[in-house]
Length: 375
Image (cartoon, rainbow, N blue to C red; front, top):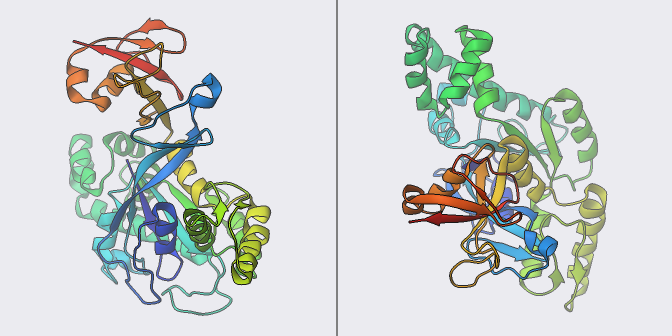
């Protein structure tokens, strides 16, 4: 599973990627700062069972802070988008093909309206135009592929082969064909909606005048999830936390000053607190990631253990691993995810909460703690 971070130049797209991963990517005021996609690891957050069960966990593949589990996800920072990409303008087809690697898109929009359609500095620009043109560019690209292969697509079996090259799952292809038939423009829109769900990160929300643009965008695109966001604030808070100046957990609506701050730092922290955290409840970065994975892709988090009584692995680590699994996954799916050999040699499993034996086809729930037994 991969989350694509997309947007035009100067929206703060690369800042968002840095805020989510703290990888030191290049952030610049010029077109196509990102050419080859940046790859990194971000984190989604869930309540760790350690607090609920009164145990101290020892995470291996993730992290736990004050009962909040940080579970890793792959992020892809895609090159900047320009109008006409489907015709090859800008990085054109490269941008669009990179896009289809993702399962869900976080579309970073400059909600302050201070950059035009080309990403150049301006004032009074309507950010709703940007939301519209991303959807149109993907639709038109899909449509061009459909038109070139129309005769093949009329055959459902061949359609799956042709359209899977766009990164579209077969179930989405069949569902779209059932809803719209093979009419290219209708089919392309439906395929985009099913295969590339979009979360809009309304970035630069701390800039004066952004509130009105946010309200307008929400009214114009009531079917989209639009989250107020300040990537620069998230970067500043994480860096201050890393240096020991503040105590901050990403996604929080507050922070605690615990180190000595100078006048400039105090002023900056106060601005973030008043203009972003208190006003919107968070910087929005973590909310975008969580919405993408849990609301749109409907993933759950499951904790495999070896000892169902101690909730530990063979080394005694309590709740050592947290795995993201698609909704509807079964125990045998988890066994294969942990290790292919465990899946091949699966004997049975125990639900560590109820201590009941469960079978290979038992459907997993969010927060399950499962002891897998194998030969």
